[in-house]
Image: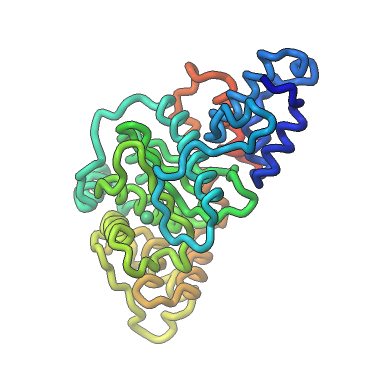
Length: 338
Ligand SMILES: [Zn+2]
């Protein structure tokens, strides 16, 4: 058993390259200098941190050991660009640790998303009175199917390039978002894409897909799963797997004009205006105009993650969870006023 102090343990975790935010989020509130004197408290500290960061507890109990992540082979990565094996293991393990808490804090599903067509999901949302499919609709749909969705405010590494991941724990699916945006339509696309991975059964039990950020929201080259998940997302959001939204007159290729046109045609086309602007970007490759339009479509730009996590906090049943897990999740979900 280790005689290592809490401070030295932090040092060892930092040596791995873990972010201070991740280490602090996993650190239990009950830890104090007095606790150093107790061998059982020191062991509990290490077991708890290992569980929350996805590390092998044995590698924390032996102070001469380098901390080792438990999972790496479980995840398939999309859009890799030079992430090391250790970075991949860290993202995989951290995601799996959080997904396990989310699954245990959500009632088992009554329905199942696997095998459901994008068209049917879309009709379901529109039949319940929506004019078009919005981010909030997708969040309601996910939680109704017992698929927890959260936006991570803490990452294992100081640099993050993760757009979103789908993690399956046993037979249950969870979606962890990472992409920051001030516009709901951008996040709606990423969430719809992850729902596509689940519905198209790309992720086996106890496996996960990590979507790192590509050049544009949809630049998938030869990856068939990515193309299919994109087509699923677009069909769910717009009614067509490959919608074509083009400039039809002078002035369209300006953000403000595109915003105006999107707001005007949203109701008739039954496509959320921001999604319409993004579909224009998708069709033309003119992302500059599409992004400028988003700034004109929404009354105020505010971080979308606050809305995603406010809904998560309402939905999660944390009453029976260990207090350290709840504190950890609280830190990972961030403060609304952050
Ligand atoms: Zn993907």
